[in-house]
Amino acid sequence: MCRKTIFLDIDGTLMNFWGQLPESAEIALKKAKEKGHRLVLCTGRTKPEIYPKLLNMNFDGIIAAAGAYVECDGKAIYRHVVTRDQLSRVVDCFENHGVIYTLQTGQGLVMTKESRERFFRHFLDAGLTEKQIYEVMVSDVTIENDPRTRSDVEKLAYYESAVLVEDIQKELGDYFRVEGASYGSDTVNNGEVTCSGETKATGMARYLSYAGEVRENTIGVGDGPNDMEMLSFTGFAVAMGNAKPQIKTIADYITSDVDQDGLYKAFQYLKLYE
Image 1 (cartoon, one colour):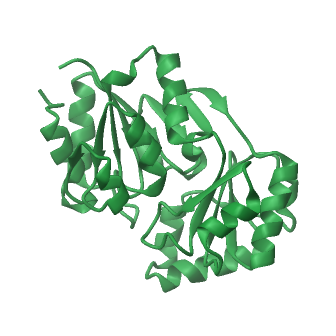
Image 2: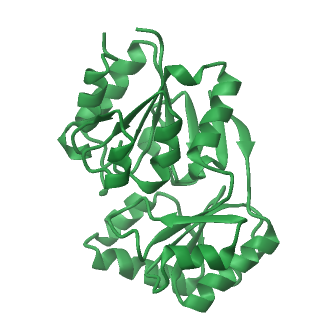
């Protein structure tokens, strides 16, 4: 088999929703790497939010913040941030609707004091312990009284909105793209905000161009809404068993759940160990 470049989502694909990497997934990554395939993280998380365990595994690249940050062989090759004028608009929107929101920056998570308190209550109510919340967040939280002043915001996330995703999209306009959250099952009240034109697919294209690899020899593995472009772009698309229904409709292969050896079985099906 020719060398493949494999783009891997994190939450719900590599890691389960408790922040655990299944042993079978770790074995799958190691065996594929030994066969010479390139492994690239492709996540909605910013780099500071990526689990240290994954960063220490020496992936061949990182596409973070849903395409706003691209790294190849340890070198940052692209980064896009929200302008202050547009950041002010989205923060005003969230404040007006009373939602919990986080700014995902190149330095880590940024929240207001109120959002941080409500953020923890949200995930405690979802069944996580405080220790698990910190483990899943990874990044420390910086408290900002007025987050509109930040100049390093790559994307944003929000929770417990009474306003539908499509209505927030209309309010924010063409500069932003709003979609249901990639983490967890609630894609109606929880969402993610990225800059229009910045997707996992654009990050993949930038990575491939820099690395000198071709799209035809790529594999994408994902489960959530922000994986749509990734799986549509990639040469072969794998959906996890726990993937959202719309993800499964565009997949070339559907594997098992993340906690049922899904990644290992997908790599085995694709003969990446041979």
